[in-house]
Length: 217
Ligand SMILES: *[C@@H]1O[C@H](CO)[C@@H](O)[C@H](O)[C@H]1NC(C)=O
Ligand SMILES: *[C@@H]1O[C@H](CO)[C@@H](O)[C@H](O)[C@H]1NC(C)=O
Ligand SMILES: *[C@@H]1O[C@H](CO)[C@@H](O)[C@H](O)[C@H]1NC(C)=O
Image (cartoon, protein in one colour):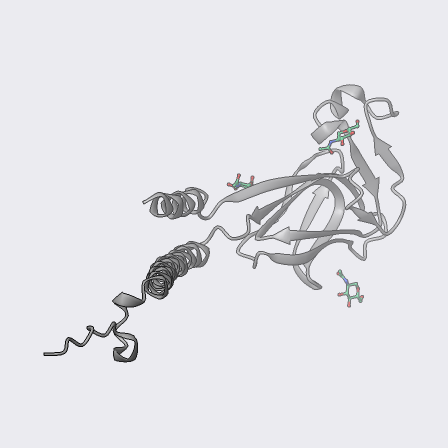
C-alpha cells in the first residue's frame, strides 16, 4: 500500500510538469553571445548612450556592431530583439531563415522569431548584409527550452518502471517469506532430531526400538 502510493506520487509529480517550457533570456552582454567583431559601443547605464534610452533596454545594456553575432542555444524556439540600420540576416544551424531591414539602429524590437525546432543544440547567427554601412544594436535574445523528461514517454516510463519495481519488490518479499518458512521448518526438524537422539525410545528405527524383556512362559 505504501509502495502503491509512492508510485502514484511519482506519476503525479511527472504529469504535473508535463510539457513544461521555459523562456530563457540571453542579454547582449552575456558570455554566451559571440561577437565576430568587438562592438563599436556597449551601452550601459554609465556609458555615453542616452540614459533615458538605456533605461528601456533589457538589463540596461546593448551592443552596437557591424560584425556577425553567434549565439548557441538549446531549445525549440528563438526570438531576437535588436535595432538595425540596413539589412541583417538571421540563420539557424547554417541556413538563412529571414532578414530584417530598418532605418535606425536605435529602434529596438522583435527582428526575428522562429519556433517548432527540435529541443536540441542550435546555432543562431545574426549576419551582416553585403551593405557595408549596416549597423545592428543587439538588446537581447529569448529562447524556449523544453524541460527534459517531462513528456508522455517519460510518464509511461515512470509508470512501467514503477510497476516493474513493485513486481521485483513483491517477488523479493515472497522469496524472503518462503525462505524464512523453510528455515523455520528445518530448524524445527533439527530440534526434533536432537530430541530424538536424547530419547532413543522415541526413534522409529526398529533396530534401536526398546525390546520388551522376553518373559519366559
Ligand atoms: C516565450 O516567449 C515567446 C515570445 O515572447 C512567447 O510567445 C511564448 O509564449 C513564451 N513561452 C513561455 C513558456 O513563456
Ligand atoms: C544584469 O547586469 C548585471 C550587471 O550590471 C549582471 O551582473 C547580471 O548578470 C545581468 N543579468 C542578466 C540576466 O544578464
Ligand atoms: C552577398 O553578396 C554575394 C554576392 O554578391 C551573394 O552571393 C550573397 O548571397 C550575399 N550575402 C547576403 C547575406 O546577402
